[in-house]
Image (cartoon, rainbow, N blue to C red):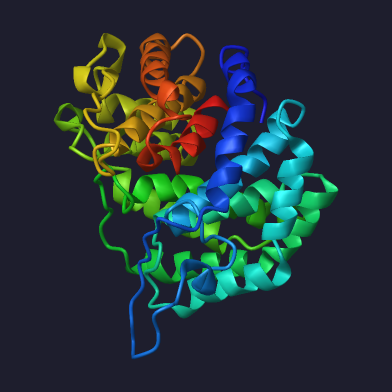
Length: 349
């Protein structure tokens, strides 16, 4: 992915610090949250790494996946300014065939809803990051991830046809963001072998996004944010549809969905959220809202056609939200630091 001049200097200044945070997080097993359905006595894992031997750190499974994605992404786009040898060694130790097979079993063998859809989306983003990088280590990591990739695709394909309605709130269940994360891998899977690959997931995501969101108009973005959002339901939906729809169709869809972007309305979507207590795990989510909004606004500015009057307001909103979020990525409370760096890297790359 080519970086724009506006964001590259920020990334290169902060990349080493982000990598250090991620390296510390992936090995930090406690404190932790384990979400597990018990189907009988003796089914409770003794400790997180007994259940998920790769993604056991960073407080919870999906945050640990995010931190691994961050490390691979930084190696790809800023490998000369991070401790590349240390990062590669850490990922080599993590991405073992046996460990990733256990992670695939965790996804495939549970009750079908574990980490759905947020963790699934981030995990396919990680798979995509390794599988599309022409690098010797990445090729090894990607090969070891094949069972996990297959399990995740199977889970998406089993869920999407039955998901009659989208989830529109701004936390882990949000449907649009997870489909956006999964879509690049789905497309790459379809295009493998010159377009003769497996189109099932790409087709399922595209069809469901159109069914869920294609007719949306007049979204009440002024009601955002909710008190512990880390995603904007309005902006994540718009970002996903920007990937799904042809450019001309998307421009018209966005006009109907959020008709006053060019005028900076609704104001709440253009105004960073205030975080009153970073040590409160739910309130701390709002730092992520600022970071993910910045990413969405940047993405919308990039997707819209040159000269579109919405580009300037979108970039201004991206800059304001980035300025609110990025100072909290490193050195804040662990309720922030175990995950926020992934959103910073998503924004800056």
